[in-house]
Image 1 (cartoon, rainbow, N blue to C red):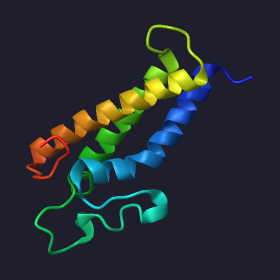
Image 2 (cartoon, helix red, strand yellow; image 1 turned 60 degrees about the horizontal axis):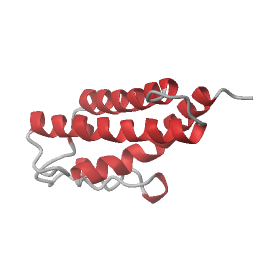
Image 3 (cartoon, rainbow, N blue to C red; image 1 turned 180 degrees about the vertical axis):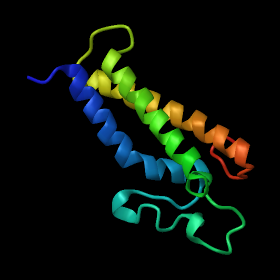
Length: 122
């Protein structure tokens, strides 16, 4: 039987990889969407005449660093749990919640440092 920590970490990674592109679209209103709906093909990064380009696409180090840190934070919480032993579902929910919170904070910082005008929390 798979240890609940490993199962939750794996589930958090899978969910993070599926959610990261539409999450980017939500944060930056850039046009990124679900994998089955075009992924980044409608991102403003690909539009030459766009006034602004998605900061996670325009600055790959910021985008990759932010998303990796968010996913790794979620995985760490899924592995360690938040103070108690939990089932796979509980650990996964905790991991995904931390992933989303870290992603929002890192996206916000990216928007500030790149002067990107459209952000979820502006």
